[in-house]
Length: 286
Image (tube, rainbow, N blue to C red; front, side, top):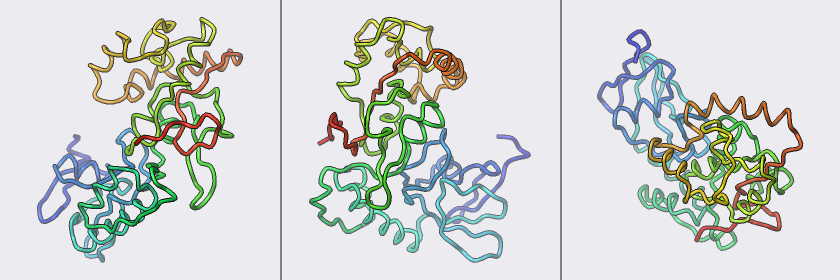
């Protein structure tokens, strides 16, 4: 941490040090202060979609107000309270809405019980896990660069889906969307592996080659990644999905450049969101 950019803020009656303009939630976590959130990843832009990281902030002599910590910056002369009655009431109200939206999510239900939120029955949404946080859409666009997922519909019908609810050539089957999903609402489909296997030889690159982490090697394991030595070696060396590896971020520019020069290549998708309406709808988790 640069001394020139360090900022001291008051949190719950004690002082902590953060970085100027750093997302507040990250400064709080570095100081060991727990703030619940379901839509935040440090490698992605802050959105404040789940609203669970709401905290009470005051600048100088100003009035206290509520704000989401994931997209609020660390600033000088800042006072933060993370567990006031106002904050807990707000989180409880947010959780009641999230339970109605995703009653099948164990993560949401556990938080609802912790904050004493009322859990209402929603038979028409039974088994639904997606909380519309947008992490899968953001990782696909900002980190992978494939933009294979997007938002469809409005209001209560808003959902994540591939273009036209069909397989898309943009997806490289990296599984980053499934890895960042906080409620396990999106996952890899078995049918996707079959589609990858059916490709012509030069197009059967493994996902780590498409991410720029390994040489352009053709997959010889039928896309059964759990059997792959490369999968084990990379997985043992990283604490996050390989898409967030710095080498992958730089390598993907070359991969996308090769793909743009050869538009005939057919990259079928490796994941479909659980809310998709296509005939090959992905299986919901129990």
